[in-house]
Length: 296
Image (tube, rainbow, N blue to C red; front, side, top):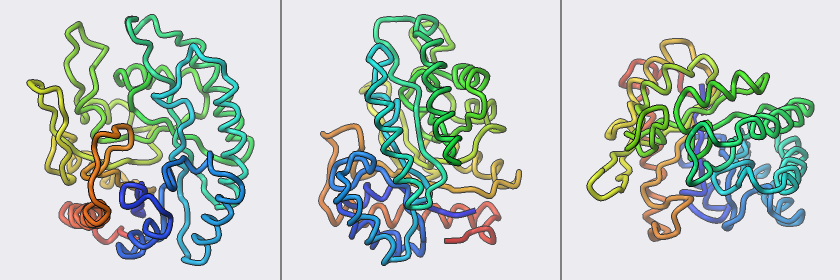
């Protein structure tokens, strides 16, 4: 088992992302953005610089936090952009030795019910994505975020049933603020434990963030791991008691929120929050009796 994280929450630039990772004693980053752009969207020259700095520092990329089929992509749009992102990601993953790539299942179509979401088209496109990465020896993992599979655990299971070989990255906090579309309107929020319990046999990777949903304001307050409603301690205990030996990736959201430009903080606060978050996660893992499994 190893710890890693979305280091773009520590800093925009790769130098400070590497610095935060090394300060934590880790040797992996889940790469998402560098200087405000996803790693699969950097120019070749920019990517070469990033790859060189990672190599010099002895830091690896364990997972591409890609934007492939994410909440910003509509299933009603042509597939060209997604196909191009996959094509750019594969050789870059291979160069960096990354084996995992985070994907999603396109945004929920607003104004339509959960059973009117062009599911078959989503399955078709994800089968193509899965196949292209698998043929390259890489593993796409679907995240339960603001997408079709994130509408509730049964929708994630539909993806599993219709996309052979698909694995999951489970995010502990996304259920906290996400409507449970398996229930009647007005949709309640999801239970992280219920979602995890029903999909855990397909989970190959974990994102750790935590928070509390405030219905009266419609906002989520993000917290350190174990202090919110994401069942972080319970999920990690079950996961590690069951022999999980993969990556656990932090996505603090304490100083920045990747998909909300209105949330930001000073460079120093961002960096310090990220490092503190990583340290608290390590302490939580020790608290539940699995400190011996920690590695860089």
